[in-house]
Length: 106
Image (cartoon, rainbow, N blue to C red):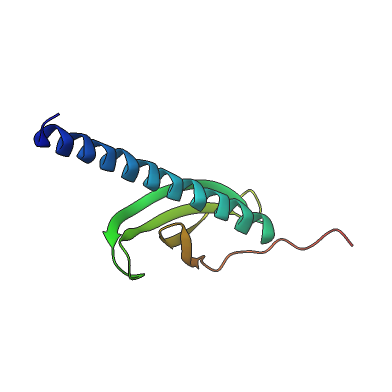
């Protein structure tokens, strides 16, 4: 194996690893939003990645990701929120003012 082949294989491995890392961040975002919506009695409708870029905000290189998600509080309405993550960690969840359904369990 030549040095060029070694560099090629290491580059391919690095790209595959980063793809896997970005995919795991998306899965973590989806799990977090499912829990968030369940906790706040909302229905998660959709989730989309807005942007992803490499950053050094936490002192080490990691992915900075912004997601846009849609949710409903009654099933008839639709609101759009944002989720910001550094790596697999949520740094900010922003939801607009929305209607809250009255609690009918009492």
